[in-house]
Amino acid sequence: MKSKDAGERLNRLVDIVATLRSPGGCPWDRKQTPETILPYLIEETYEAVEAIEAGDQEHLCEELGDLLLEVALLARMAEEEGHFTITDSIKSICDKMIRRHPHVFEGEKVADDTQLKANWTRIKAEEKPGRGVLEGVPRALPALMRAKRISDKAASVGFDWENPTQVLDKVEEECAELREALAAENKAWAEEEFGDLLFSLVNLGRHLKIDCERSLQGTVEKFSTRFTKVEEALKAEGKSMDETPLEELEALWQETKKGE
Picture 1 (tube, rainbow, N blue to C red):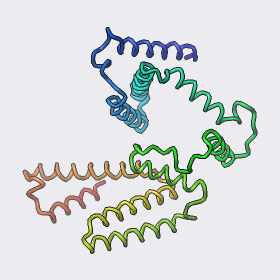
Picture 2 (picture 1 turned 135 degrees about the horizontal axis):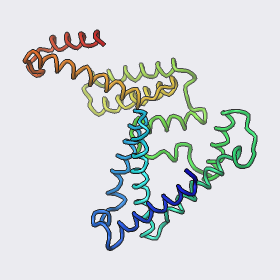
Picture 3 (picture 1 turned 90 degrees about the vertical axis):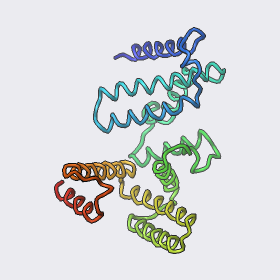
Picture 4 (picture 1 turned 30 degrees about the horizontal axis):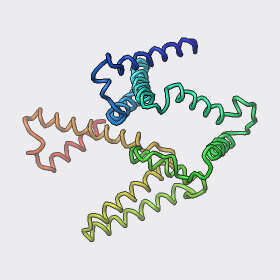
């Protein structure tokens, strides 16, 4: 598809959204606000993530369209309030990408990926002078993702462990402190130490180049699959889980693991 075709179709989407939001449009669309649209924006983003992880290109095509709709709706709301238009948003990202890629658009020479990253960081800093190292990480990010981004930014200025073994030592230190909190039966302290432990594990994942979110999702799926198999095995015997002794449940669990 030519860029002209993409532009025409984007304009059509913008016109459709404008019609939906007009006095003679859809009552549901007209009453929406950025706050009410937010859950749909997040939901469509995660549906796109699922399509990518499944390698389903047809589904991804559809979900990217749904995501574009939420973008068009939010931009239309901003335009109605006199703040900005979707054209302003497109211009902003185009200008930013050109500015941050001088090696592509201005013929600047770079030696390697390290220099590319350094140039990107420098250009970002020049765009917003005086900005703190940790600024720019949204508070609304899921906690694991936010922990990873915060850790990345801290590491970018040298505030980091030298190797994974040192991070593992920190994980063990946090485990010991959590044990102390549990022994003291102090829930608030335990909650704080549990958070510290999770943060340390995210840093360990970062050093091991493991995506914590993906890793945890894989474990959750594995647990769910095993749990369902145990449940089905009990149903086949006319039993229910809540009435089955823990020892029998554990034996079935171990049997299920061996069968994988």
